[in-house]
Image (cartoon, rainbow, N blue to C red; front, side):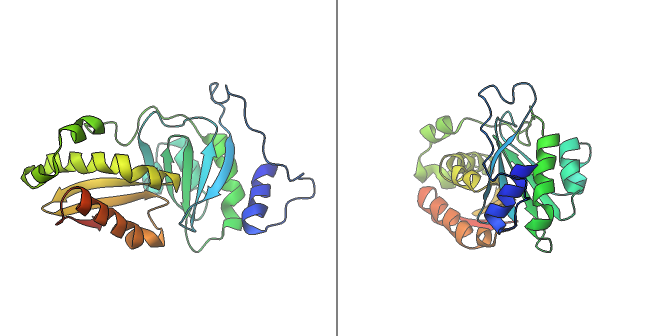
Length: 232
């Protein structure tokens, strides 16, 4: 597909085919995606040099996220399986209307970029369930409306987890999503908040340094000064 070769040239200086006119793809009409046809509107880099975000013309997940950490996770899902058949693909992350694909450092984007883009357009489908579908989740507004910072140390671990989730939903996750990634709270043990990065954040060099430090500082200031954040 010419547009993926054009984007490849834009980001990496790979010459486009002679018959490519260099024009950006046309924006789909407002009803695109309603008949099951999805298109990649644009691609954009993330802070992780090994991850690119492919923005789709319509929502692909009803709510929440879908993450495929490896080929085993992808078994039984035709879309994810097709992406993991591309040598070098290490992680596939879906949220709202974008797909973030993370590749191995040993494979250059010039070798896989077009095939990844074409596979997304050929195989992408709508997911009406997400990884979080089975997890009870209270609306962040109701949790934080009832929350007082001084009460945090007296909360049990389940309550602390819900509060941390709500704070992350409001202040941290939107920024991570803009960069093609996400953050899953694995649980809280004492003052340790255990998290797992998703999508582009998973192998991003800054995720275990600057980003993690910012999240920890934010939770310390917002909830309790003794909190530490551990990425797993």
